[in-house]
Image (tube, rainbow, N blue to C red; front, side, top):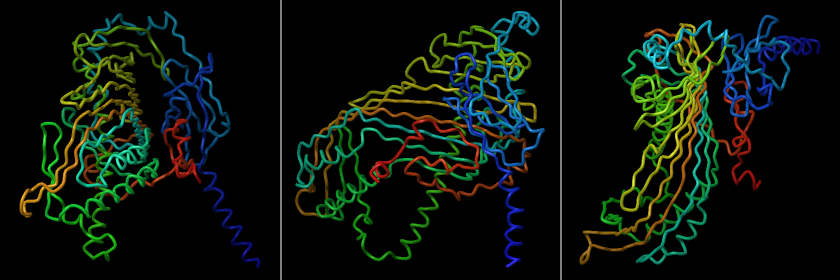
Amino acid sequence: MKHHYALIFLCLIFTIPTVLAQTQIHAKVLDSTNQEPIPFATISFNNTSGVISNDAGQFQLQIHSAISEQDSLFFSCLGYESKQFSAKTFQDSLVFLKPKSIELKEVMLFNENYTVEEIIDKVEENLDKNHGGTFEKSKLFFRETYGSTILKKSIKIKASTIPEFNQALTDSILSDIPLNSYQYTEILGDLYKNKLDKKADTIVKLDILKASELYDKNNEMTFEAYEKKLNAIVKKTIKRDSYFKIKSGIFGTKQDIDSSFFQDETSEKTEAFIEAEKEKEKRKKKNFLKYRKNVINGVEKSSFASEASSLNVIYKSNRYEFELLDYSFLNDQYVYKIAFKPKRSEDYKGVLYINTEDFAVIRLDFKNVKSLKTFKLLGVWLDVYQREGSFIYAKNKSDTYSLKYAEIETANKTGIDRPFKIIEKNKHVKGRRKQNELSGDIDFIATNYSKRELVVFENETITETDFNTFKEKAEVTPIYLPEYDPEFWKGYNIIEPNKAIKAFKSIEVEEN
């Protein structure tokens, strides 16, 4: 029995340091003068790895090593005095930052009476030095929020040769389509970047370590149920060698029917079918990796630092008007606060925060001044009416600036008000080719919203060999969550979720 106690004792000895070596710090950053939340505050451990506070000033920081007396937490944000705490004794749930006032004599020390145009010219002159680079590896967390609201949904059946396809069935389907739907996708991973050629798209590779999707699967199950019901009607009515002629107004297209559509779902799965399912799963993983990599790369490439970006406030500065609003303060450095707006046809207005010492852009806030895309033709229309966000940069170990945080919100409104006609035709049947017909009018209006947030915790310069050696492997698909689970990301640094994410529950969960 003594040996068992000795074994337990040894386990405790080796387990306790492991537990203690991981610490989670969770707090809220507030303005000391008005107690308002401070978004985009940087919280770092020993000025190395760190996180960004969300729009409510909240953050959580994971420290994966034992904390000593010498370790510190640093809090900083534009316009505020930085604050330092002992990481070992930090227990505050609220952290107050004091606004930094800049006296005229301080301004005179660094201001060389540059005009606002000269400041912008110097930003462009130093762009490659400040925001360029070679090869880089970033530890990042990415969250995409997608929401859709249906404002109008109507399908009026005019004629149908298939009795089951009637107005009652259509109304039943429409009534089950939710007016509001939301989906959240979160990814933790390592991004490998080749930043040598700024004119070309940055070559990136992504290693997804963990991912989740939060949405209401009940909606998906409803659609699947209706799909099976509709398929059963179609299988019973149409002929195997038929094809569909789909018309909407003056437009028309032909759609052949896949022979696998008629396969009996209850029949025994063949070896070929099983292999096809495995291949489908591989494609799913590959497509998830490819799409998210392109989205993350697209976020960074849409910043001012990319020559191809529509946010061309630096590369095409002659198309904008600039105004020096004020001076601000960040990490013991002064910055110019410069507003910009288009002279004529450009899309965005905003504010640039420029380091007075090296003329690096450390933050950019932007918002569109007009609809970015409009389309209207024969009852189909689209209006991309919102795109706004922020980019925040921080100096890395190679003395250049890397993206620290990005947030982009977009919204559009789309609609369709058109007649439609679906005709089943078959050239193998004697007599008229037309077999069945369904026609009616569709009237649909919806708004779509997306928010993409990207936070980079660690940046390191790598060699070309490191970049070329890393090979992507599509091994991770997102784990489905029917409701927010605070344990899912425990032990990882992420962007603190907002109230909407924390409160999200699928209908299925609410009923249980």
